[in-house]
Length: 188
Image (tube, rainbow, N blue to C red; front, side, top):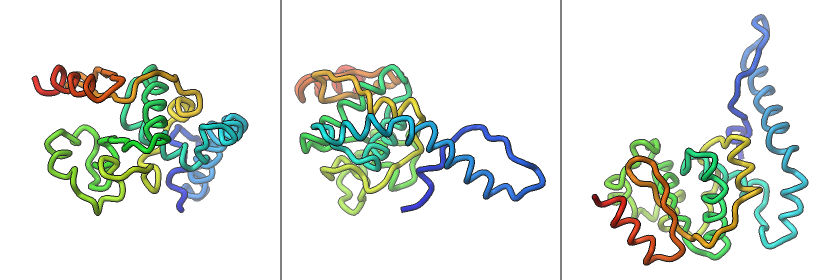
């Protein structure tokens, strides 16, 4: 719908005496094409014909969520798999950052209290705690590493994850285990 999600964030060298905006837009689009679109094109096309049938734009949207949900690159392939598996199983993603994106609340301020007060907002089209879909557009510009995690995800039995107050990640295979993680790591 717009160029925002195709402008790859990076360091670019620009020519001082030329108009900066067109140079920057072209450099960022070229960066996106070389670091994401062209690099993963054949892998994505092969996945489209398999059970992992996300379109390129859906994968970009998924990777934008992973970018904001998980800071550690080592954990991103597992988080990507969990979100992908939930989406394909018609289970809500329950990604807190999508709910906060609608309100322009950064993740650092997307606290349990903020989430709890807005969790029932059905008018929020990004609220994956209420909607059984990917948001209508990406919520961030994912890095090449994050995009790679949604292409080369790590299959596990996990269906849930949460972060404790020190940003440690805790996985669970079922709701009972996830609720125990909530008791152990969130409400202390």
